Length: 52
Image 1 (cartoon, rainbow, N blue to C red):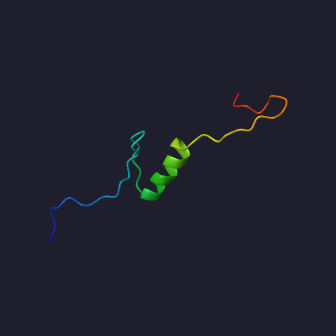
Image 2 (cartoon, one colour):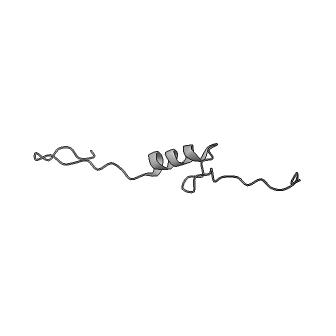
């Protein structure tokens, strides 16, 4: 019957920051948004357009 077995759970905890989410799709979105690569900003010819 399996009444006392531990349920198989999908991985819903972020390995980077430990944040617990309820849905695996939300975890993927969180990882991409919070821990994904920073967008590269292109420098303009006059030296502007950097990060600062």
